[in-house]
Image 1 (cartoon, rainbow, N blue to C red):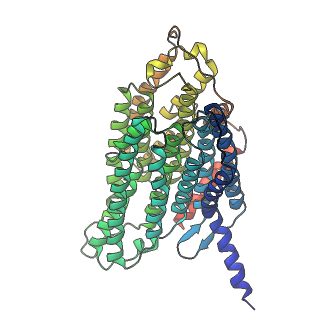
Image 2: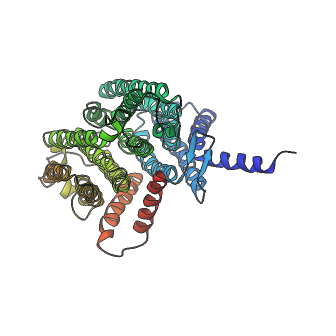
Image 3: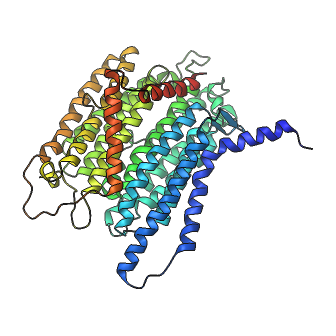
Length: 509
């Protein structure tokens, strides 16, 4: 007879691994359903309808997978899976965030499939494989597993960016993303090798032990952080991001700007808590002790560079991409106080930016159906008169992305700036305030364009049902969580703050 304790431990480990395994199983199920249900319509119109219906059917399978992921996390106690994965409170909340963003992305993907720009099975499967890699990256305590998980998350993205074969810019953006991914992987792998050479171990816990070779550990830690910052679109590793925003389909861009970027910062936050500032035997300051200073410099560079470039952009998607670079600068500033209030502020800021970006890109997708294209700032002319509800939502999303008072983005920036103030980083605080002014000016250009009279003969585009759902959900979150600090408006905001505090506190133990 087997040992009951071993059996119970194996069951707990299997249950803890479910949130990571389910997306991969869902991807295989999507491919199987598509293979079994594939038909050969006779004419082009029937083929178009078949592709649209297949997209709805397979998206339903993907949504069921996301629901199963959420249920597998409900009420689960923190469980360590071997020495590789740790589905603790931090990983649980991070995966819940990924599930929420994946839901928004799946809703936006229906527009792409409805216009028959590609078959739905392969993009949905690639998206779920990417989600599996991101979930594993947030929960791993092993550096080699982290490298493999990030590969699983990013390689499907390279194919997803180029999924629209009708656009040459998609292939170009995919190639740039591939080179950016290759660079980040090489730097991360080199850092992993230096850490192993210094400690003989690949676990995150090894970063806090006294190394036999302090110099090797310092170089390894610096390379690890540089590799993660390159994936997180932190300046100066950002030039590929605006091009991807412009060339990739809207749902792919939304996934990169939400789940993929957020995961890099989740991993950075876990990594920084695993590091212990110390001095080596000769009294020289290790690179760990200088990380706040280095992160502060990179954050300020990203703030200034991203928001300044957003001011001069004509293309709407490129403008959003550059605003994302500026947002990454704010996230990097939060990492300066990762061991203080910056960790909690970073979690909230990632949620706020992800919701706002999903809303902006969802609005642009709803304005770009068939013969109508909404690519430049001038294309927004007449939006306030022709589609006032979407104009209000679009303004709300842009203002939240820029940090306007009364929105979730304002609360997020306020928390990051408060964390910097508590840490005594007054120079970084002033840089953040100045960057917010630049962001508001950049966001004001599209808002003014919407008030202009519409062009004669320009076709209008109606938002589809799933796009309306995305806009409504994102708008409600931005307003609710933006106004929650002003009074007692419910328990959702308090619940979210409590979960974030619990998740970050678990990293400090």
